[in-house]
Structures are given as C-alpha cells and as structure tokens.
Image (cartoon, rainbow, N blue to C red; front, side, top):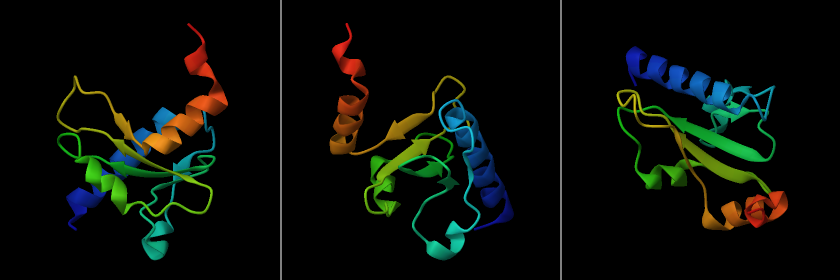
Length: 111
C-alpha cells in the first residue's frame, strides 16, 4: 500500500471519528490493529468494532466480512466516499445486530 493510500485511509478514519464523537466522545483511531489484524480501525466506540473504508465510491458490502468482531461485540463498516460530495457516509452491519440495537433503543416504537 502506497503512502497516498495510507493517507487517504487515515483521513477516512479521522472523518469517522468526527461522525461518532457525539455518541462516543473518546473515539479514536486504533494505531495498534496493524498487529492484531482484526480489521478494526477505531477504539473507544462502545461495543462496536468499527472498520472504515474511504474509497472514491461506496465499498461493496462484502468488505464487512474483513472485520473480526470480538466476543459480544458488533461489527460495523463505515463507508465514506471521497469523490461524491452528495453521497453520505453509510454504515453496514448485520441484520441481527441492527435488530438488537433497535430493540435496545426502542426508537422504532415511537411514531
């Protein structure tokens, strides 16, 4: 991986940290996952194991499979396009985890 790709990845991780800060004020880039190779880019994100992809467009959903979530943790992929100013960052997680989150929060029951 070249320097420009690494820099683009770092920018994406910093953007994801900014997105998550309102909920996880201590969110930060995980500088040690290079050794653990779990596919987790951010730390201090509660039970979420977050991987960030910062490509020209949104990444394929199968990139989600690169994340090795810890026991009792929720794997989350954040896709942030670089060249699509109208495209919002997107989140990918399993349907099972999505439903678990909704049931815990209860927000879907408010109309």
